[in-house]
Length: 103
Image (tube, rainbow, N blue to C red; front, side):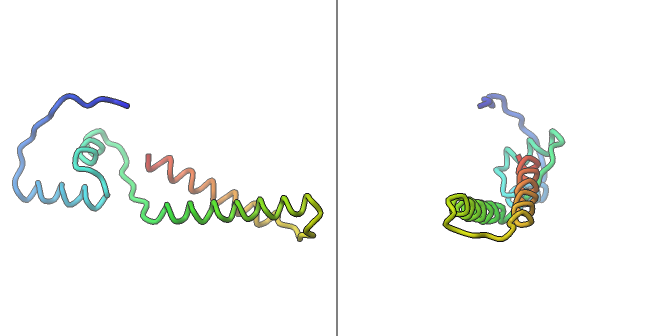
């Protein structure tokens, strides 16, 4: 974990201060993190709802795994799940890309 131990003070108008605080809040970042990302040219991405999507993807993955286990035990005769697995894999990869961009 990096240690931030240097202070940079800037002067601005009340309106500028209000706008910067509002933007930081809109991006769901602490003021310090927002200003640092902007100053260093980092991309700021807001991914509202991503946690729910990830939870749903994990649940789908668990269900697919349970179906595969039952099929391998010959306790379930299943249809071809390959298209579903391919779609699950694609969505999971897209979520991974999005999360890498956000971080």
